[in-house]
Length: 510
Image 1 (tube, helix red, strand yellow):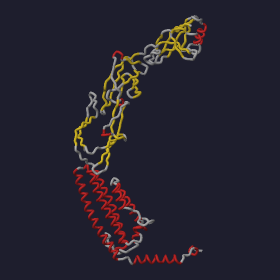
Image 2: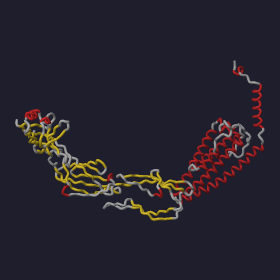
Image 3: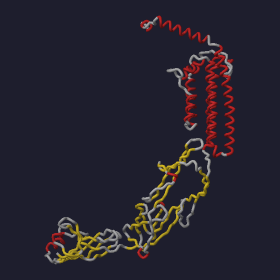
Image 4: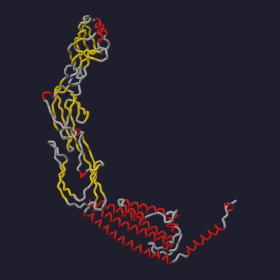
């Protein structure tokens, strides 16, 4: 059973459908000739407006070329944008002209006017919908108009007033609720009306082009500032110069408008009157950046970024005892080395006859690799050029002999050392060793290893290798009586410099 039989049309529905067909036919046959002639009059007027806009626009392009020849650096950026505007405008204008020609060709056939000015089938209601809607050209036209609109807004630097105008003039919002823009423009519309509407878009293109071109031309002068005060300024790269270096400065003419004070910012914070001050509580190189904000003659606020850096150093002086310029073999000799006025990051230290390692800015560890003498050399990077700042010789010495101690743990488990004096026999149990060091008043730090020693008791002498007392030596000590003397002699030790040395004896009384 068919769908029609399941849901038959009511007499009322049939009547409405028939009336719609009749009305459509009447519209197709009886469009007033006066109305169609009116569209022709509007069309001619729009072409006159387009011609006037093109004459004005060409004059502006000629002005641009003249300004460019006078000052390429100042005008080049804006002329490039103007040429881009011409290309975009001509492209859309030509596309709409081709759109109109194709419509007229569909309606008038081989007799069609290629300029789409003289139209025979002015009242044709089919070709617009066939070409724009069925053929899909209406959507393409909408897309191109939207792209052109956004291009104009962007070129106007998002000027709010111009943005509002361009959004309204080149709107692709449908005038009929629920109907796409292309349908409201082309569906069941007389050909004469459609062509006139398209010509209006062409007129709007030329008008917007002229308006925006005038705006771009104005921007060539918008960045010019009127000044009422001129000063000579000297801007040095640095006021501190090393002998052999170069003093470099820029001598400039500064022009300002004392009636229009810019706003200054560093790191996002406002700087009153551009006087930037910062407390320098740490050393190092400190970069900073910011911008200057200024309202131009066109009313737009422009920003000018900048960046620089400054160096903070420790207050320092060089004091040298030439008779005590000594480094020791086998240990880390710690040095603080700086060049006044130069950041530590730009200082290089070299050692002739040794190795050098930077532990932190300005702090170094130097180890000699030969006997006799080494030379420490400093170089600094100044104005992009590395320069030698000086050098100093240092005598290489072996480490001084350490002292020898007997190391033990007291009743509380605390490790102690003794070189001479009284000691309980109870303390000489367990892990007892002979050690070598500089003691509590050491001026240099170095580790010494005891390699051998001899223990002398009333029960004889016994030798040991290494630093710990042997079981036999401890057994003899335990046999000793109160008041007996314990002697440790022939102590041999080796330090980080590789030199073996004999240390003084240790004597304690039980």
